[in-house]
Image (cartoon, rainbow, N blue to C red; front, side):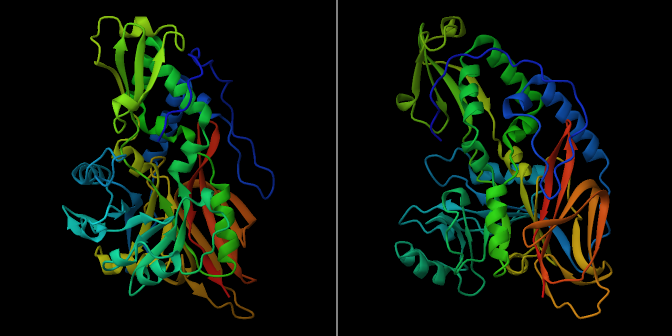
Length: 455
């Protein structure tokens, strides 16, 4: 990631307005953000969000598990030791996956010939299942075997090889290719953390300003120490563009929706002294000689910041994306009978998954199905035939009371503030459900189910 242009040192964030209940969204619309990213990053807002998250986590009560299925916490689009802009290693990723209970990691190595990305970590390692793959040509590809000889081919030829057997491919970075065809693809990302960072230029410019200011750099360091997940989650926006494409595509065909962590552990910002009037600012994956040089003309308090340090000394280091933070920020939960590659691939391919922001509260146990939980007629990802005169019901159960949105063919058809929702099925369509949680006076999206296709 390249640093944004410096805009001068900004003052401490002003206190936000007094807390109140989140406003009810307009009919048919998702709840809107209340706080800007900069407001969310104030000490007051971070502390308030943290208190609410702690309350939510403590109140989780998972529904009884669906028969013969386990809920495995997975992450897609994970990078480790695979490029010069990746700061983390596979060993570090494994350590942090175990720390937060990640069961499955779909790796997305950058292709570096002649190395074959399918030779990366594969299988169970210390209880965590690794499935190799690559981020290539705008896709996340997870073939069963090597496709190296096709990596230079056109997209269609590559996807045909990837999709052989139990291979899968997903459209990635949807903001860059909204109109891309879904032909030959298993699914698509429905949330990508990197997209949130890209459309938050103000907060990134502010970050650069803070780390070259003696006072605000201390405030930032303290915020990252006390509230790392709230800081990382401050840029979150409801992924309307991603979900809009997904809703349009699923009306025509089954498209599996997965999350994209895009985690690299590379957002570790450093400030290096050049001389008594200037510093270099960049990240741990940048060549120091190519980092941006800021002088006292850009930030008047740089001389004070560097005083007492030798030239070349690192005088500030701010780790914003340790793997455990970025992986818990957003996940893909996989409903499968066993933790092995064949079972996990089959479950994902069938759409038996839901996407969640686990840092808000543990979503494990969420259910969306037709019929009764003891013997559901269909679960997320399934197709189900609606019979004339049927009394079948669509049901969603959450581990916490939530603001629930039931969506059919991209349109909201029902809402509730409850732990569960029941909807009588009286027409065909593509049904999915969202759950939102109240955090610091605003609704934040927590869970996105894959659809059930009612025919």
